[in-house]
Image (cartoon, rainbow, N blue to C red; front, side, top):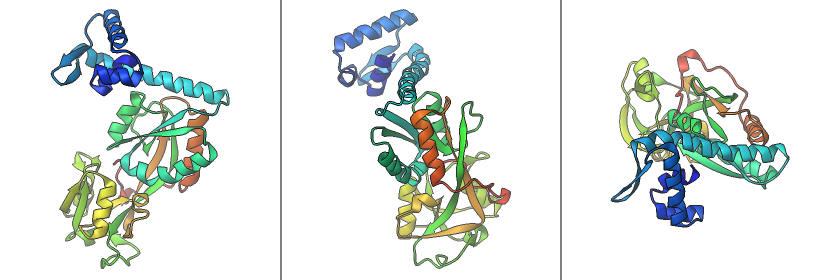
Length: 299
């Protein structure tokens, strides 16, 4: 199954053999043996690479979960035995990865230099949860997942602020009310979550009685913040994402907040539990978000 997953990830028998440090003939032999065991072809050779057959598409998610669960089991066993070394795999949405993980990751390296971190980043909470269900990481950091069957640990509330140039007329304000922004232009991000079937900014501005005027669309929240700081438009973003950028950060009244959590498929032990302790120490104490100031749930 590890060989199959690697061939699919690399889209090539040649590259997969290099990654696995085996010969192509040994790799092909093991794939054929697996296909005999399951009763049909899992892969098909295409003009440009390798693809999955319908049977292979059905088989792959279970193979990925089995392979990654085996890796997690080895890491958990080493942690329980007090062994230093190895890796801790983390998964997060992009905005949280760039806003929360740098400081905590630096603390981790100082305290646990023998355990390296591998970070997997995703665009939305839905994608993050889907990949976690398939075993991509030991621990996820993101907004509270809906209907999650494993442990979920609250970390605190993350405030969403407006970012604008330091010389903007609103930059010196303590807070801004959303209706005041009806005539302003916005920088929007493809990672923006969906609320009740609408993009979050459209939804929240609609509740305030206007449609947001979009000036720029971009792919990543970090790019959106820098565009807003340069004057391309205002942007709503987690306050941590704007850290270190020369810009004004102004809260909304009533405030926009979203809960941050750590979650996993299995009980948190060893390195994963230790990392959650660092996350909790780095975040503000949990507090309920006002019902009238609903913040984005993902992104």
